[in-house]
Image (tube, rainbow, N blue to C red):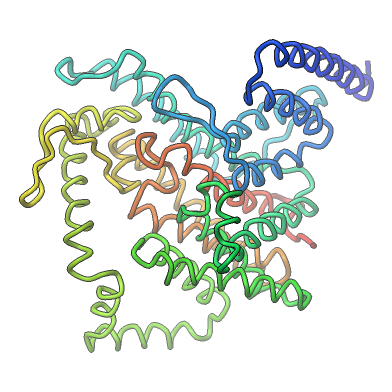
Length: 469
């Protein structure tokens, strides 16, 4: 049987499975009404559509992450959401489709090796952590599920990255996905900043809009297109300006006390301007040196961040949390305590900060790098930093070659987004959330960043260097 015949057979089987599934769902829904049973048939129809046009699945992730506040219980403290669940489903469908069509392709990239090894290091840490678990440290009977959920966050981030990295027809679909995110995410961001309609917009959006990675990504993509795509229409240019104004209002005014927001956005803006205006770099460095030498720069930033009051309320306590997490992880600094395990170890003894005593501390480090060290040890943290460097190097190389058009805007924007993401990881577990802190609800925001970061690989792959909108 030729390839076309095999595809037709697989499509007939897919239709048969879909029909039987819908009949089963209709019967079950009639006997046991539940919102979950309403969602499942919709997912079945979506799977059939994705089989016909896989790229639409990525669009569904964007929509689900922004405007579908649906959660699925797992029997633990961990709850899943639709955007998160869609990623492994889409990856499985993409893999199966490629096998059926016998044209499965995996785009080679320097980032693949460290990312793969990082996932394997997470599994190794899970096994070693359980084998060496201190019996004096309590844990629940189903704690291994929580650990697997933590590792799943690492895996789903990688799968989201690889889905777009191996995107078919990126010259067509990357612009479509990018503008879908800009129109939906940027449009809702604008509405959330407008008096009178903000409350309505908040009711139809997910927690993605109160997470730093979303604003970092929106600033990077909108800023990249605005600075590098000269052929934009006036309407698009005006929309991008309005989106960036919404970003600035949220980060520097409405949520000024949340340092992650304005520091991440400032990092994105700095990288974008650095890449767009290379001749001004010398003047910028000279100005920064002068401001620092005269004692203006750092005190101004300190006061804008809240000064001594903010440090007393938040900064110092975070250092105490970090110190506790690092100290318990030193039991096994090589492979760490295992995914999600550090809270159990850190909560055994009371935690003191100034005059307060936390008798039963539920500890979060509020630092993604410290978290990775605790989850996976020096091995996992080192592999992640290797991946971070390779991805930055890839983006920087592309930005030097692609300086205009949609592609120029995309690669420069995502290079800035990656730098901004690495910066905000210092302030919380934004990009690879801790299941007990930002968790899967907040992962909806960072998973969007992982999706679009994969586009750097798609663009860099041979034959896809230049994209046209």
